[in-house]
Image (cartoon, rainbow, N blue to C red; front, side):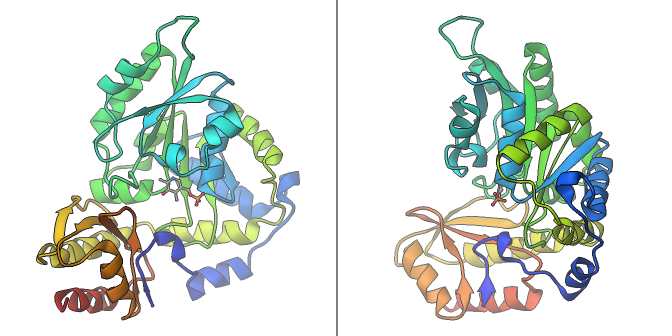
Length: 337
Ligand SMILES: *Cc1c(COP(=O)(O)O)cnc(C)c1O
């Protein structure tokens, strides 16, 4: 099976498993899991931030961050296709009691001008705008990357209007590798950053929320309320430490594979618009003699799994369990359609 539906399907390599198996653990709710503590210190350090907290999912890290940054009745500005808005089960309303200002951005990205436009005036009729949440890379944008200068402009707007700035960085390392950036740039700019270890970095589960000491202290209380105090999580944290040490630079390989697939798909008469491939995600339209459903079915007959993400679009995501050979096999299969 060649699995392109998501980079969440990755399984630990033998070396990652060994690191997990050998992990020294304790009760993390008591703050006594040495491997969790090591991962949290390592993540904070990489970003030049004060502290971090290890959580089971990226949904939890995002939701905890939003809860920490807001009061019930506040409003959150984000792109209208952002994960925090469309893929977290209405969590912003459920957990934080906030309303949302979903902005129509460009491939999952909003601009500083749009943030300014959607900040509510100081008027008792309006919810208080208190948080801007960005996503980099943007999932529904086809793994699109922000221009860092735009992020800095958004930061200036946030400072001027006293808004917190959160980053859903589920695939932040893909952006950092693709653009040749440094994690510390992000650490300096955002009040909080969520990164997923379970996507292209290849761990079975786990995300980290990074921020200031006080913020993470508050986050720890909220994680407990959400049922996220997860005891000997060091076995999972060991996979995270391994991933941060070994699996970041190789993301460039996934980006190259995505571009190879885009080129092959682009030569077919049933392909419509292809989103520019910036990282490890390829999104394209299937039309004419094939539909996303028939395309997906034909590939699955050859053990190749891709995802229909709308009535017109197919998504393929590259990750460390997909070798160059598998990519070549997929290209041959697509050529033959
Ligand atoms: C995967 C993902 C998350 C977190 O998802 P979980 O499945 O809860 O770990 C958050 N944001 C984006 C953009 C994602 O792609």
